[in-house]
Image 1 (cartoon, one colour):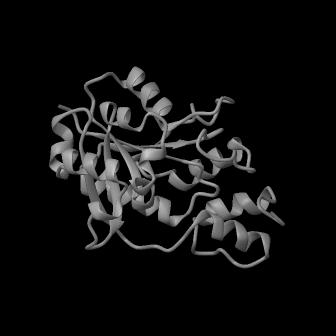
Image 2 (cartoon, rainbow, N blue to C red):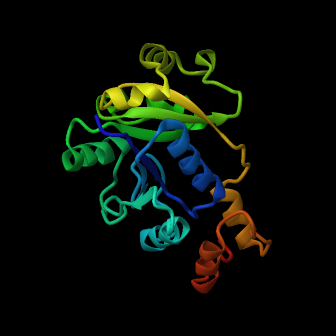
Amino acid sequence: MRRPIGVYGGTFDPVHYAHLRLAEEAADALGLEHVRWVPSGNPGHRTRPRTPAAHRVEMVRRAIVGNPRFELDVADAQSCEPLFSIDTLERLRAELGHDRPLVFLVGADQLLALDTWRRWRELFLLAHFAVASRAGVAIAPETLPPAVAEEVARRAGEPASLAASPAGRIVDFSMTPLQISASAVRTALATGRSVRYLLPAEVLAYIEANALYAGA
């Protein structure tokens, strides 16, 4: 069995250091061959981002350049149709085959709402789930919706188990706690406050050159 591939989706509006540390620490903790970044174009579960997909893709491209463990997947960003996580994983399965372990990277907050995702139980047929948590804080089933807690208990595994099957496990991994959010970055940019050291300099230079988020 080949090493797992991480799948990291999001709007990345804009991409920042918390996104980058999550992906980097997941690669280490989970033994991933690489992390495939999948910026969304028109996410089906939320309002379409105001920032055009082409800009968000370019910001991710600039943020991950030079990291051999990171790859950029632009297929979702180039689609005009509303896409859900199930669509992304079905596409990747068609591309990569049914035997390769895939690991869908999410934050702990996303796990809390997992039962609201489209065809959410089917996601486990397509990928493992890896949940980023603060250091020393594991997934607490009592904080989850009952249906999600049941799935977590049934599918709980260890990072080493991810390479043994293509899908179906839930693991957690610790990441450095960085209190950075894309919405806070956008607000700071719109009000003229500094966002230096919250995101890569190459991304900030692109934002400034294209007047993104000004007065947003």
